[in-house]
Amino acid sequence: MKTINEVQDEIIEEFSMFDDWMDKYANLIEMGNELNDIDPKYKVDNFLIKGCQSRVWLYPTFEDGKIHFEGESDAIIVKGLVSLLLKVYEDRTPKEILESELYFIDDIGLTQHLSPTRSNGLLSMVKQMRLYAIAYDRKINS
Image (cartoon, rainbow, N blue to C red):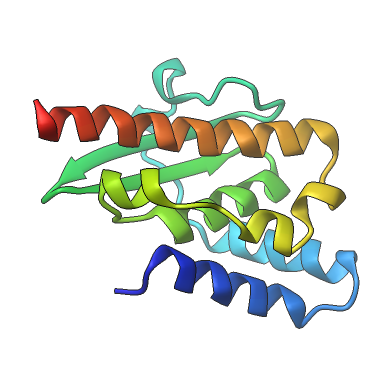
């Protein structure tokens, strides 16, 4: 399995193939379209990410020491952002997530090209994924 940094490097390389942001947005939309829908029973307030203008659900499960995430959004570009984060954090140990530094967000220019509300929503998703990692890490070590 690739490391978090190897996955981030692949994402950076993939986005570097596009010259303008319309093409990058199209790629994000395509990634979102390829994301499996979350089971409707998990589309509840408990799994709704706070701080996102769009509705984003993130459902974690913990098995064999790794966190598995399912995620979805009702907004097409945001769903692409969910897909990006799942690529990086899917099936990782809590320690891997907590020790990682997400540099791909700045490197592909998301910080500069997303609206402030989408950018805040992206940070809220990252924060929630890290909070799940903290919770599972404590469960392991208790």
